[in-house]
Image (cartoon, rainbow, N blue to C red):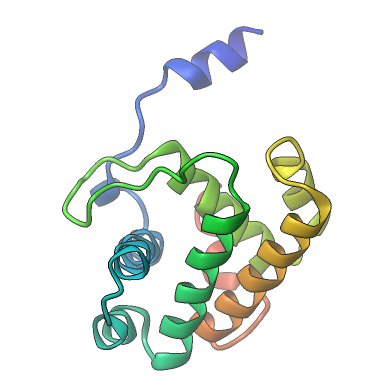
Amino acid sequence: MSEILEKLLAPLPDIRDIPVVEAKLIIGFRLAVIASKNSCDCGDQLADRLGGTLAATRILILAETIGFAWSEPFQIGRPCCPQVSPDELWLLAAVRMAATGNRPAFDSLSCEMLGDSERERIYNDLRNFVAAYTGKTDGSRWLARY
């Protein structure tokens, strides 16, 4: 029980203290959510940040999928906010699991929040994004810390 309490009381990480590849993902996801909510075209900015138009398109699709599937608003920070939200931490963990093909861990992480069909769609969209972002599906760039 004390392990759970320690995790709950731990401060949320600063985006400047996490690996660059993860920080780029969070900022890119924040931009994608803002763009989709405001009908803005941020494709060029996302492509620059994520390394190509395919990765930019896939993160826009992922943001939309998560937005529809999440029962409550998915909490993201403003693009300039240094603090990483709990939902953004979930996103990083989910990307890591999809990148390594660890579907059971993803299901375990998400089963209380998402139904079967929502998990299936999000997992597939995560895999598609990772493939576009890394240029491969082995997930070696996502094995950084956690």
